[in-house]
Length: 268
Image (tube, rainbow, N blue to C red; front, side, top):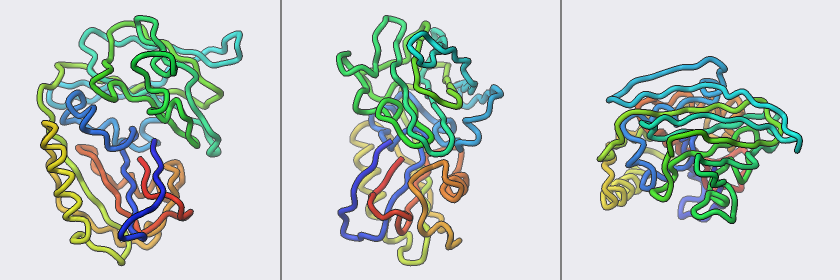
């Protein structure tokens, strides 16, 4: 999760990138998470389901399930999951109702390295929302950069009080080339698709230089006025309804006129 303060030429145009994810850091993880961006784009309602679900796209299998947790002597909740030999990536999500701040205490790989610890190298101490904490929902994506990989074996975690922890695990052949579909949306009446076209072209060129091909679909205008200004919190009913309109076969970018609390430039 990231939050940025506003400082733009167009101060009323803001961006919500719903990746569940985690931010549009495709240059770092796009090589590993290819074609089927469906997991990162699933709504919170879909990811919070307790039943296991599986998809298969282009040879990559994705399974989503809830992890059983136990209370340790330290008062923290603990759980584990196993990444198989053909593991490609995983998204570990944590949920807590009523917008309370939620985060993981640790996430330890099969080699015994806590990748959320500031003393580990490399680490996601200041990178993952699952470590920094966020209202209602946070996650850790592995790999988040080429410095990490979804190591085969047993991963363990400790977490603060939460409602549930879900795992989206992707297995199959590791992709050798990245092609990612981008679906832009724009809300309100102040701005149009033409106002963001140049930015999308620049984004495409940046990723191309990093070996990632972006296929950018035509921008879709959402005219419903309730989506002109929305909360930055994805568990907010209006925000959730907005992002649920996104496609499941790509990365959804939502350009809005403003946030209901006007202090941020964008979040994902």
